[in-house]
Length: 430
Ligand code: ZN
Image: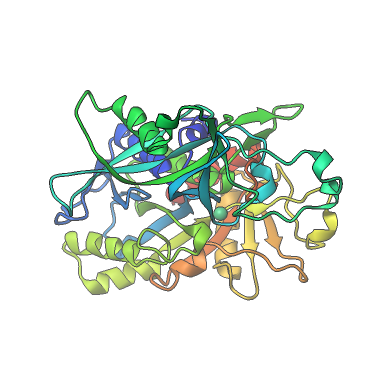
């Protein structure tokens, strides 16, 4: 699946996981239910596990024992900054319906204004008993909402900078309602109509939902030579896509077991059961080792031999703001994947792991760049150092350069994406 289709099919974390698991299943990867005993895993065969419908862990078993071969792990995250619909969301004002939301992660608020927006996520419906409700995914796919700016005539200083309130300024408008009857359960009725389309006439009862806004305009290429990719959620779905494509393209009988771990909730600090701060991946790798008849000592040996590429986008040098960047380490669009380095260890990278990844890129014929923060600018953090708490694995933090990180619409370079898939594939083939 090409990047643009992948992005359009993955408007929120839950849908990204569905897109991923469908691609994996189509390629012959077998789903393992984490509630069941871990089966014996066959060399050369692929498997995957999901957690909370919003994180996925795929692997292809290597020919070596896990203790001898370790793991080659690529990780990335499938959540992006957005707005979550609150319960009792409908707010009626003079015939206009708006939805009450709260902010998820750290979006650039103003970029969400005056765009066609839509809704996607999961809906929980009544199941066989209280503890076993069922999950249905929804993706409206059509523009439904807008957060209109205030006209410049009401705020002549708008171009001098505006402070935005998340509670007042950022609520999306959904409809004009003149019919009093339509006011009751407006959102619930909208969801019911949408779910009915895929329910084959079977009755269902909605209990709750996790619904988020997304940019309803499809991803596109732009630039004189079509060199750029414009889309929401490039951070970090572009790295998720690169990891998936690499896993599917990689050697089907590898020496070392290949792992792709896609976490949720990186944008809110990763401290959830489906986030990188969870011991879930460590437990899964442990279960894999034990299911092969190997020992806990074998697991610790596998961890020592493992290498992890923590893939999350980097900041491309912006020609309008060159003063914000480090004078000697500012990656350029189209210059290839970026190794991210931080003296305070917000990134997992050290000289050893940077050298390993740079060599992988060199062997794959891929150029590599370096990012270090301007020393007066505090940077972000990512997955690698958080994972280290449960899995002390040697690894590198890297990502492709993008502009406008956390904008509703970010910009990347197509050639960097192609480079990244090539480097990841070569890494899995080691
Ligand atoms: Zn990210």
